[in-house]
Length: 446
Image 1 (cartoon, helix red, strand yellow):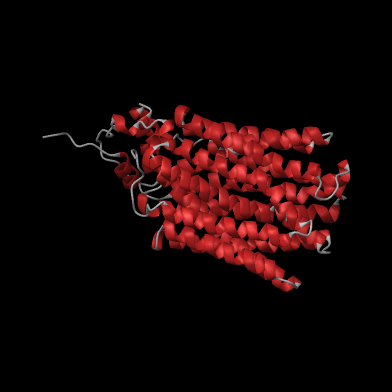
Image 2: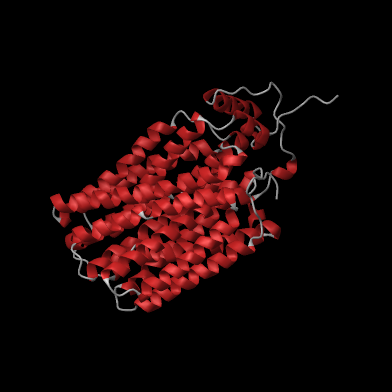
């Protein structure tokens, strides 16, 4: 008789869902909220920075400042995603957070615009690596039946960060002049990442990644740590080692069936990112241009951030109930409807209502996309693949401030038409992937 072996999926499922996964969610979520603060804070800090350095509204320097973080994230997502598949998730997991805190604080003390732009590029480079690594870690530690909703739960911490940065900006605007408040905003936004770093030190590397990299002993110890934390016990069987076919090379991301999947995913990420950041990066300035005082702008933005939470909740329910693919496509189409209605809005109430609908739909789409993406790549190139498509999204993010600036220059119809088309195309690409991952084990091969 052949001695029994334990597959990695069976081991993760047997280790169960419990305190370990909830702790991992809290730790990754804290860092994800900190990343949201770093990504969005330039929109809140721009009025104060403009006052400090004499920037004109909608100027090239202002656009460059909003673009800088996204340029860094583009390079960071590609670099750190590929590195995490080679040296392990945990090392990159710790390094990117450390660098994000350091460069975030550097921005708060910038003596001029040049140093500030450089600090924002470097901050983006660091936090660009947290996305592919955090989502791969979460996907690889959560049992199959609960994986989708946990990935949406992790993405929902983006709303926590959005609420936090809006509340912080609002609070600082009432106590300090704009020329000072932006420095405090940048400095305080970097501190949650430090807490996330300290909390990460006790976490093991992904057992799935360890096993594929030829470290079965370390993989077994990581799984036993998960099982102990959840009050479970694994059978004393050796782990089944993936065959050579599981050692997919990064070049496979660009050819064959996986290449088609990568291309469609990249287009989905690009379309959603261009529309989301194009609207919400400039929204505070747009509202300010409509005559709202700064405090009212921050309060409105805070309300829109709160509208994201039911979007996440519905997405978390639907990805396990009806599947990732239909949930993602549905929220993207709803986002297109929201952008069209925003264009038609005239009064303050209708602008707020359509903005809330956009916030709800877009963050529901993000939740489904973050759940779907890591499940579509095999283990050996999971963080490379997630890093690649999220890097394409950062390319869109770098372009989006230029498109979004049309909101302030009287070309609202052009900008929102572009964003509506982006959401529709992204929905079509998501549907064309043609693969449903709900209830499926994570793939080790294509």
